Amino acid sequence: MSSIEERRVKKRVIACSALLAGLLGGCVGSTRLDPDFGDAVRQDAAAQVADPDGVGRRASASAADGARTALAQDRYQKNQVIPPVVSTTTSTRSAGGSNGSGASGSGGGN
Image 1 (tube, one colour):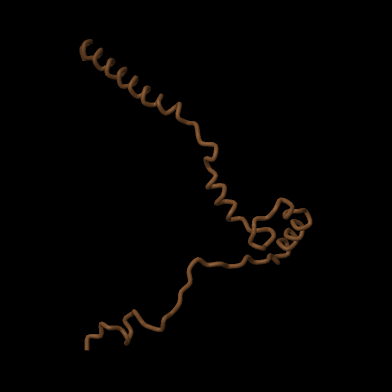
Image 2: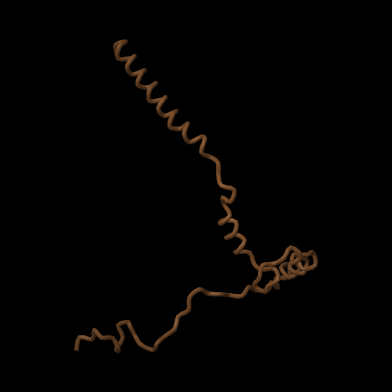
């Protein structure tokens, strides 16, 4: 390569580097987050924790006292944990008809 071509390549490299540095520099100042950033995740995590009172309401701070915790730990060690109430989001009901390929289907071919 001649010295003129080398200078052109160096100038292009420097120009591209400066352009990239300028583009990346714009990202540095925009890292401030809202004070409530992450609240939804924390709320979802809290909703997945079993209610220590077992009455379906938000427990107060006094609900997790030492005696209650000791009883729960004792039940856990003896493998006598009280199972949580199973709840479902959907229910299925049968109307008595058949939508499959059984004898009552409408695509019989007779």
